[in-house]
Length: 258
Length: 197
Image (cartoon, rainbow over all chains, first blue to last red; front, side):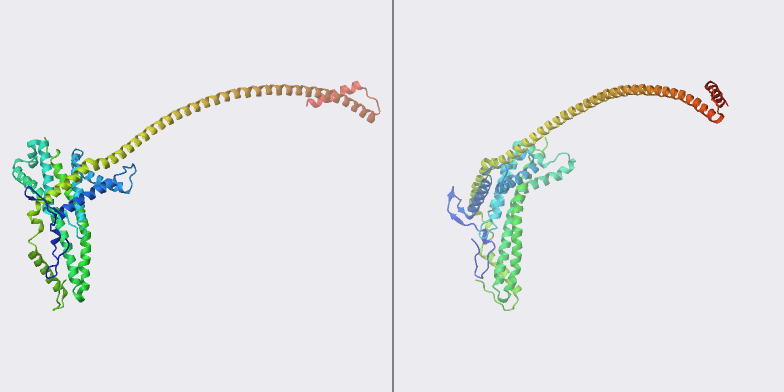
């Protein structure tokens, strides 16, 4: 982990994304080794569970500080689910809550120096996005049967428009898992690489003799970028969860008339 | 560590150069992005499934019911309290209506009693004043009778005195003793003359 110095003394900004094997584990011919990604994914889960369990341990009528915080977190997600899917979609509340909590915690854990960012890998964000789309498909078909396909052909349009609308709707539906996964992964990766690049500028300029004073410039920039990254860490988790809600609400009944 | 030569003395140039080197180095040392190394995908997805599955189970079975339960309980409690408050308010409103009704009744009863009392008092008062007036009238007429009697008596005395005075005057002036009967007659004519102009 951390930075490596190459022959010319430069930092590789992508090194932080390397998967490092902590323990070998093979099953059915697949390499399922325990890696830094596995460790930080489990750490994120452990932190979320510990935080929520600790905050809700008292179940007081008048909540204390920690209980208020957990209830705030709960209500924030609950409000998101309610506003997009209504009461019917509340069965997906645990899923959305899990997604939001996992992505947010993983993003924030990545802000610690030397920590691995689980959500900076397309494999992880892609798997999460595919899971969401699978739930959308399963729920859509189980609820509407073949009428699910009416999602691509909204009723009440003039016939010629369907030749335009239907292909657009199908393409936009198929693009969802890609946009969902790439948005999160690209944001995380770009932000962390940017921080590393500016940090390496600080080191390079810092060693530049009389001109080391100039190192303050990338240092200040990096400070601002760190602040921005905290915002992005929250925002991307929110966007991921909200889009999941919207995709689920598309097939939850209101949009597909019978 | 870093080796940077300052031949030109322009730091910016070196920085730019260094960046180029960094990019080159990155391209040389790592064979692209670690994210695109498909050999790590099964492990990442496998452990993600385990971690996410654990999180989902913990939330679904344990944490969401606990946090949501506490919130629901609070909402129920607040709703109960509001219900209770509404009920108490209705009771209070009813009590106010009853109170106001009895107050109005008492007020009208009081005015009836007051009117009755006033009538009784008025009657008593006029009775008493009438009795007193009658008594006063009686005593006044008695006094008038007394005065009239006194005046008649006084008039008789006056006539006698007048006769005596006239006799005396005649005796002094004329040197004769006047007959009282003639004097009386003379006085009578004088009085008649003065009375009938």
